[in-house]
Length: 140
Image (cartoon, rainbow, N blue to C red; front, side):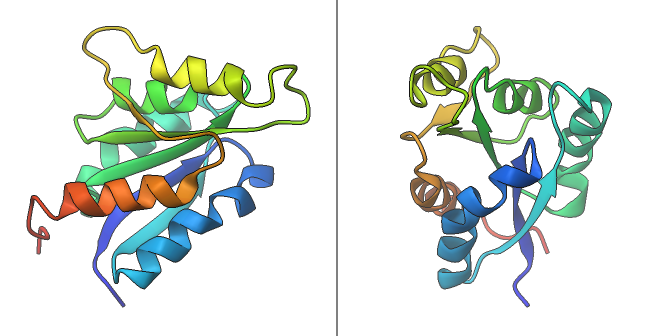
């Protein structure tokens, strides 16, 4: 089993399958990952704890999938010094077909950066994570 290096975080169980492309890409590249479900709105303390503890578990990059208000990537970036990649997700509740999530993720305040990929493009998030990881050796 590959060493854990990437954390994938989603706000609800319904988003798990939509982030599968990231997991598949990381698997194909031999990069270890974990997936957790914590909501920035419903379980903010769990999100903060996950983000703060990630580096201590060997995680070097965080990928966060979020729809609608898409607060999750920004909240994670506020609680971690690790690179955060946001994946805006379409939602049946969105009147903007994912554009609302894209704008929420890309418009972070100064000092809280979040890299952002295209709407529903979890694969590109994993490719970007792999490129970031290529700059630094594994932590073992």
